[in-house]
Image (tube, rainbow, N blue to C red; front, side):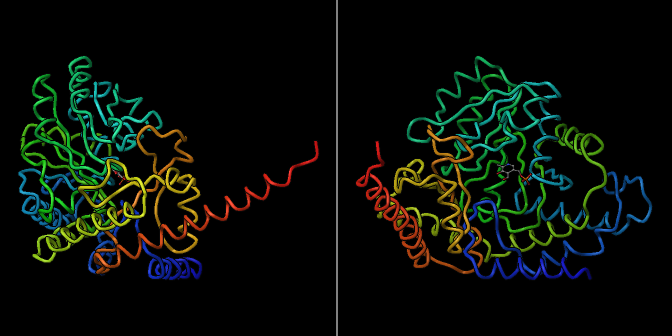
Length: 400
Ligand SMILES: Cc1ncc(COP(=O)(O)O)c(C=O)c1O
């Protein structure tokens, strides 16, 4: 084996072992998921769908893909599943194409307000391929459904997409359904972050309310990197299959589908529901412990696995420097804008935290309290040092 690759894999495993991962979009996977992901399925081409392939030798991958689909159907209680999307981004792109058609109108949550790049950010090519209108949150950081409704009636999108990357609250799928019905639009739920919590029945599922549900498989659901698309509507399922292949992608990544199947199998075990509930309880404790130290949170708390704290307000440190300071001590996070952020995305005022990965390691409420204290200590010490130095600099003036 290439010595450098082997060494880098060893170092990454060590880095993961020796640090605390609070990145909301990440998780740790089982050995079985990693083995499936690294299996011989990586070598097989299988353009098409089970029973309708352009390559010979697909009898085993046909069984694999069907098995994975059946596990996903059972887990999410849904009729049609496409497991071929290479990622959450391509799952979204294919769904937009299937529901709105290229150039069609779509409404999505702004990135700065907790949505994802693929929900219509100018920085993403989706905003060139489709006509996007962005909705957002109110002053307190909650989705403003009244405003969203007014905007939807005016813009008349074919699709309303909702889902969260940084928004810490549950989404009111019923309210969005009502809004979509009034203007004859499709409702698309992107549960990339939430699918593990939905699978563990810790939060309500949008399946059966939204027309289409997309997800990644690497976040709270604890699977490999990849995407998936679900629907109960047969007509849409046909359109979606076509949009994924041959519309957007070539050969499916069967090694990844094998690992998705393994993750779904694990999520169907009773222990997974306990895990999902622990993730929620840990996030809640982490949120409350930070608040006890006077730290302001996006929307004053969380209903999910993630929360965003305003580091600029609490410590006078922007999100970029806070993330770096925490990482120096082994607390791995990501920076995030907060609602009405005065700082640009590259700096941003907030830090996003998630509890999926630490809960997989078995951490509980006590550890969350300790972590909140450590976070506050690291950032407060830095802020105090800074103001001490600033005080000295101000006291001793430069020559006129
Ligand atoms: C809500 C949401 N949708 C889609 C994606 C995209 O997933 P991927 O990074 O697998 O393309 C993400 C990733 O963070 C996400 O948070």
